[in-house]
Image (cartoon, rainbow, N blue to C red; front, side):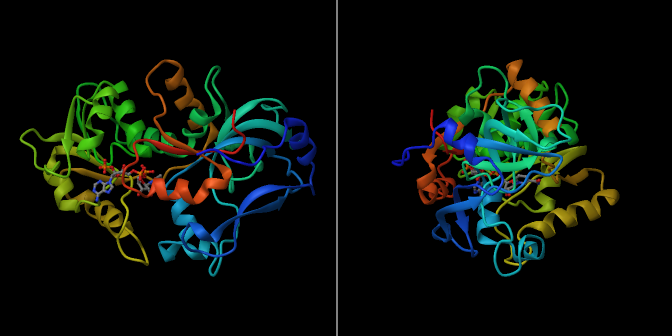
Length: 346
Ligand SMILES: NC(=O)c1ccc[n+]([C@@H]2O[C@H](COP(=O)([O-])OP(=O)(O)OC[C@H]3O[C@@H](n4cnc5c(N)ncnc54)[C@H](OP(=O)(O)O)[C@@H]3O)[C@@H](O)[C@H]2O)c1
C-alpha cells in the first residue's frame, strides 16, 4: 500500500515549485474508470496574486473525485469539460507545506503546514488559492489533515444548516462514509442524540464515534421509527422524499447531502430539487446542501478537532502509484471513513 518510487526531497520540490518547472502528477485525458488516470507530469503555473503553491504530502479522495474522473452525471460536463476533463489532474483534498505565495497573499508564507482543496491535488506541487487553505493544527499529521477538507467541511455545513441542537434526535444515513463519520461526531458534539444508519460491520465504529443508536440498514429500515427524528442528515441511499418526511416529526428538518446512483444525466439531483420545491407546502423543512470549499470553514472545523469534538477516521492509505487500488477501495462498499493517498510519505 505504499509507493515503490523514491519521493522527491523537500529541496528538489522547492526548486520544482518555480513556474515552468515540471513535477510528477497523476493525469487523465479522458473520462472513465481508474485506468484513465496515469502517472505523468504537470508544469507548475505562474502564481496569480492570490495563489499558493503547496508541496503536497497527502491527498484524500472521495465520491467527488470519482464523479470528476468518470464525468458523471453527464449534466456536469459543460462545467468540467464536454469530451474530456478540462483539468487533467484528479483530486481536491490536500495537506502539505507552502512553497510559494502570490503577491496579495498575507496570511501564509513558505514553510507553513496547510490543508484545504485544489483543482488537482494528486501531484507533488499543487497550486490553489489562499482562501481554500487553513493552517494544519499543531500535532495533526498530513494524512489526517488531508482527510478533513471536503468531507469534514461538507458535514459541518450539513449539521450547521440543519440547525442541529442539543437534545434533538438526529438520524445520519451513510454514517460510516467520508462525510458521515464527520457528521456523526459533529451532531454528537452539538449535543444531539444521534442514530447512525450503516451496514452492520460498521456499527461498533459508529458507537465509538458517539452515536447513541445504530441501525443496520441492511436488516432494518432506518426511516421507520416509533420516535420521529428532529433532523435527518441524508448522505446515502437516496430515500424518497416521502420516506424522509415519514421519519421526521412535524416541523423537523431533512438535510439532503448526497446519494449515489440515479439517472446517467442528472444522478440523484431530481430528488433534492423536488424536496426543495415542495418544502414551502409541507410541515417539514426539506433542504439540500451545496458545500463550498472555504478555508475559513475548514479553520472552524480545525477548532472542533483541537477541542476534541471531531477526529478524522482514516480507512486506508495508498501511494501515489496506487491510485487504481485507492479508487477500488473507495468504491468497494467496505470503507469506514476516508481513503488517503500519501503523495510524500512520512
Ligand atoms: N452536497 C454536497 O455539497 C456534497 C459534498 C460532498 C459529498 N456529497 C455527496 O455525499 C455522498 C456521500 O459522500 P461520501 O464521501 O461520504 O461517500 P462514501 O464515503 O462512499 O460513504 C457513503 C456511505 O454510504 C453507505 N451506502 C452505500 N450504499 C448505500 C445504500 N444503497 N443505501 C444506504 N447507504 C449506502 C455506505 O456505508 P454503509 O454500507 O455502512 O451504509 C458508505 O460508507 C455522495 O453522494 C457525495 O457525492 C455531497
